[in-house]
Image (cartoon, rainbow, N blue to C red):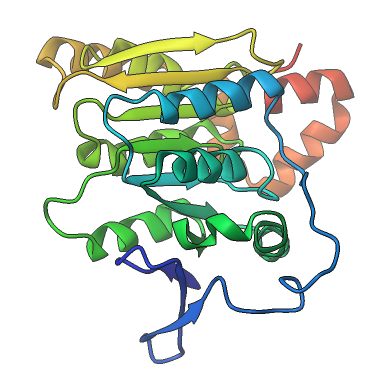
Length: 278
C-alpha cells in the first residue's frame, strides 16, 4: 500500500495520501525542532566508502549534461548516496532528487538528518516513502510524457530481483547519456543486475570491484535501445540465474521453512548465501 509519493513539480514537497486517496502536500523544508537545533551536524551515517562517494560525486559533476531528474532507491540514513547526490546537484546548480526509502523509522530519521545536516539542499530533494515496486510506477504516472530520468542510484533491498525490477521500470525513461549506478554490486543484491546490464550493448558498463568489499556498478547509456541479439543474450542470462536451484528453492518454500533451514546452517555459510560474502 503506497503511503507517500513525491510531488511531480520538483518543489521539494512530500505528498502523503489521505484515506480517500487524494494527496495533501507537506513542505519537506518546513521549520521544525530538527531544523532549529543549535548544533549543526556535518556528518551523518551512510553506507558508501570514501571511494564510492567520490565516484558518485564525480559521475554527477562530470556528466556532459547536468542531471535534471535523479532517482535514488534506498536512502538509508541519508549520509551516503543521498547527501552526496544532493551536494553534487547543488554544485551543478541544477537537478532534483527523489529518494525512495521503505523502512518507516529509517525514513523519518533520514528526513531529520538531511534537514539538520544540509538545509541548503532541501529544495532539491523530495523524499518518497514506500517500496520501489509500488512507488516508482505511481511516480512515473505523475511525470509528463517527455520526462526523463538522467541519473539513477540503486541501493534498496538485498534480493537481486529488486534491482532488476527497478531497472526495468526506469530504463525507458533514461535517455542516451543517462547514468545508472548500483551499490552492493559484487554481492547478492547486484548479482542479477550487473551481468544483465553488462550484456546490453546500449550500455557502457564498469564494475568498481575494488571500491569497497561490496562493489559499485556504473553504467552509461549510449543508445535508446539495445540490439535484438544483446537483449536476447541478457534475458537468457537472467533466466538462467533466476532458475538456479537455490533461487527456486527459496522461491517456493514458505518463509518459516527457509528460516528454519538457515538456522541449522553455519553462520558463515548463511552470510555467503544471503549477502555473497565468502
